[in-house]
Image (cartoon, rainbow, N blue to C red; front, side, top):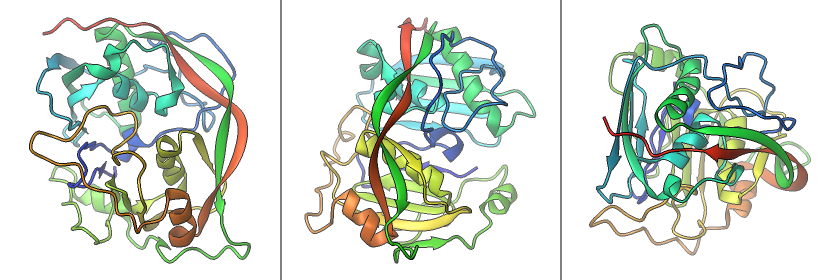
Length: 314
């Protein structure tokens, strides 16, 4: 599994396997779904919201976090110990259901403001595909989360090639690294160290402070990662398959953190100033990667929160 995170300069950090953090562009017919349902996700169409909870953690611990720290961390090493530190419930819902922040409707304010520390043990022999269902089952069990899916017409973007001849930008290149083999060889060991500023990412994804740095990443994942920054679902229509390496530098809006993750910089850390000489995200995509975002409109799934409760501390 690839492992993304925010660069050290960013004041909000999120670290998790791309299997968790890559966000889906949902499109599904309206339906009523209990979060604790046991619907299989094997026939899941691309872009739909998977609500299955076919796998569960063996042991879980949930405690409130009152540190006031703006940093958020989620990790799932090969040992099967799932750890979420200082995480708002809304973010856990967002990641476990493969959503963008704007696709969660009806959430009470405390789902964003309150933070939690969660430790859970996966069963022996678990696979990465079971992680999201296990987190969804945890949310249904410990937070009594119930929700349903609705489809609404919303603006979207298509990620397409910017040039008629299909030429890619100077910062987008097919990956030459077998990331699956590299991480298989590291199983049981520590993850690779993040690259130094300005250096390419070997395998994984780092984002923050107006930069995106990826190694061995499919463009479908790039499209999903762009969505929270443009506040729309982004669908990969490039037609490019395989995995790519890229570095993207742009001027972020606001303070440059991850949308959907509340909080300011950690104590004693100043938020990095935006570089005024960098282009906008839209311009950077065209100039640096040879890609562009075409405005569209279409059906988008949203997860409507029916009920949720504060957990009982262990």
